View (cartoon, each protein chain N blue to C red):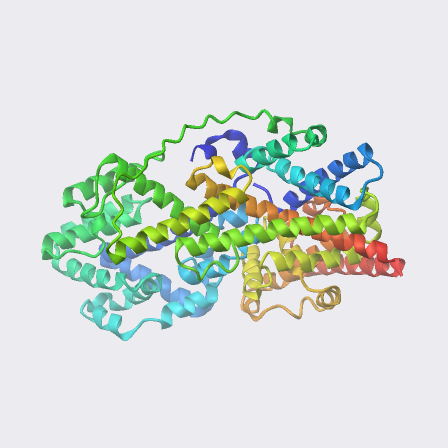
Length: 176
Length: 450
């Protein structure tokens, strides 16, 4: 168990390492490139602070490393932060989801039935949206999706805090 | 959950879920303790009741002995990490089931004495001898749920009717029950059913009298990896629907935790609305990350942030400005929470981490405010501490001190912060010395900057 402060510290450390790596690979970048690099390194740092314990962090790493040729960078950051075990942690054997179609004929009549099915529909739709938001959410079932969302929210919060702090600090320094 | 079994998991870090669960468990434990206490007072012999009564009267006479003993047991969430984000929701948790009484110790004791409504008093009258002793217990019960009131009456009638042998037996059995207060309840219910033949409200507890008895015995043994599923009346009992029910319960449990975590999600009922709120929150956080990275890219011509420079030279302002940001995003501005945290801290001084944590949270006020507070720290102690010993007076100043430490020590060097000696709170002089020292150093640092 860790305090949020240590979580933030770890994140900051890893993020800085990632930024330095980005800097060393490419010296002069446009603002968009820079933004991309910052975001990428922040994401990877966040994922690596969770040490591969959670699905979303693994999914995030996997996604970023398959993206646009920044696999090297990802590897570097992960190596630098000594959590290469994140990559080959464990392959999750997923059960093939058995899609069961409900054989029950949907009754159109009857207000209660309609309302219930409507509510179910709404929940399903929102769950889909949430799955698209949380990295790696497409492969999760409902229970683990909510667990991962919990974790993801906490990490995102830490990330936002640190980034905001850094932004403020740099602003102050540049203002002088 | 199979993830909890991974050993490295336990060593390094826990998921949010587990942390929350630990907290819930603790709360439940507290409730169960009290329930046990109740049962003892009901089913034990009279002398024990009087003994209890004495205890409680002592507790009311203002030395807060009971409150203290009850609140000695630390909240695991606080003990282990002191997550402010999660802990920030503690007050509402206490509000809901204020049986825990560690945070609001004083108020709690008062409410227990005063909140005994006449209806219950009437009910207690027929047990004339016991009335005095059980009154606080009854009101305690009320605070946890009005629905139990009827149960209490039933129990009392039961007690009067049943022969002493049964009572003694029950008392010994109740002592045996540790893990499951619920089952204790069900047992009582069952007895009621046998006698009066009425159907009770929570009929999920009894498929039949026999099975519930058996089940309670099984849970007494406490097999950890075993999920008990019991079907309510009229529910399907085949394995599929049972599994489905378990799954749904799991989901709703986790949703509850999420509800705690996401701000503004408390008032919303219904899964769809909650999911909406969660989606919005996650999206806003992601957008914030996006925006902040853009901002950082715009502000910095180079990617090299040179963090040491940033935080060592600009120590004070950078940090001071960083605090509001943290405070806003993680719901820590609640003054009640701050008090709570201080109380907690007073109980568990052994946790240095908490102190640093607390200090950080104190920092949510803007820099000038922080400065003012640090100067007048011992004066601005909330009233709640005045009743307690002078020890508590020392405590807040120590937290201010920790705050200063944090303000001062900005390079996120936690090793130093945790090594800060919070343990030896032997005298105020030492602390004020430290305090002054830090204040001076702060002034120096400000002076140097300008």
